[in-house]
Image 1 (cartoon, rainbow, N blue to C red):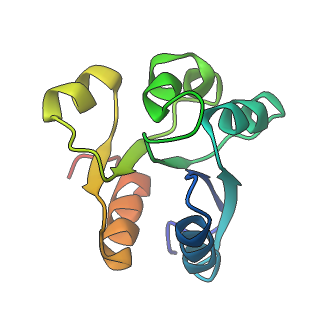
Image 2 (image 1 turned 180 degrees about the vertical axis):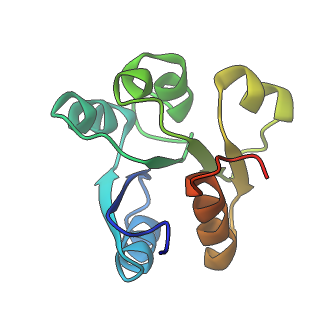
Image 3 (image 1 turned 45 degrees about the vertical axis):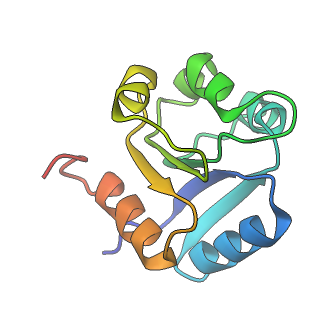
Length: 129
């Protein structure tokens, strides 16, 4: 069975064209996608009970940055899902490790690369293979 079966994803992205494209792409592959256009919107949907299996996070957001989401307790409260940082901002491996990100994709990225990264993180054997 595909990792997408009944998998909930939180997509934190402020670019409407990109978030729409990603939401359509993953929905067509069996994911339930919740889009948050800001860090504050992501916090709100988690506070309402969303427990995503995976988070795709842009760090350049209006208001608080995506780094704020990683530094805070919101994602811990949501069950500590793996987070893929997908951003145009260069990010060091050290920074990703310090903040507990599971992956990093520099924008622009191929949709297939994002999909395989998500699937790898959702494999029952865990993220390490």
